[in-house]
Image 1 (cartoon, rainbow, N blue to C red):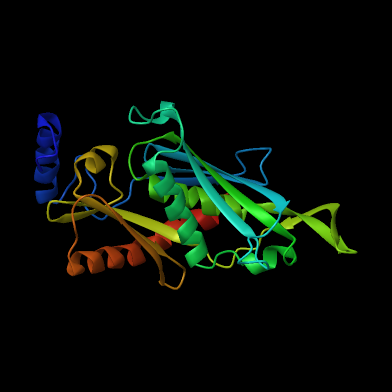
Image 2 (image 1 turned 45 degrees about the horizontal axis):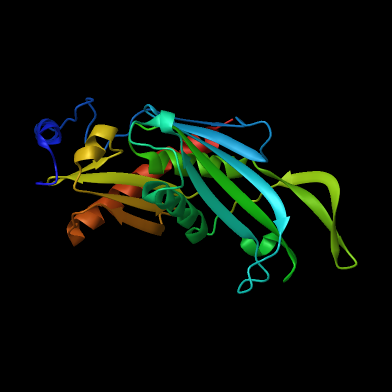
Length: 267
């Protein structure tokens, strides 16, 4: 761990000592989440919105729905666009300016989980093939970073989609006309992202900010209701053995139902 300065090295030592005793610095077990809450309808002007909190980590997601032109290679499919804004007030590690690598990765992982799980049928979002489709924008705003942004962002995004209402358009004479009415955005799956950090030889669920600072690597596994693996994302400088990856997948499959309960209970 030569990449760490003296203070992170000392922090890592304390974290490893706690893990060796079967407990973490905050008293949790290795495979235990912090308190989780999800609330929908937090942004009045959005077509759908939600906030998710995991411990002190706080993410708000807003959904905006517009009409646009499809991509040339998918003329009969709607478009899903996910972006993330890391507000500088959320963490001393965030800086103002264009999206950095971390915010791009976060948006891509959330986007991939929704796409790979087939949560949204993009073909159902087509109005006129090759000309007019629904464009679904998911904007993620990080309000406080206390570790494990990925899981909180995924929860917020899916919860916002669950409550989203899309405007209804009438297709007439090759054009689309607003009817002034709305209908629910249909979700076919509720994908859940479960993130873990490898610290030394241990795999810990829902890493805190301090744990992420000293982790060797992180793995995020997205799971649907049937326990199918929809997406896997690994980030960090160190590798993971096949056994460690399978252990992470097993943890994700076992823990995803708890997070899904929070989604389904959100008001």
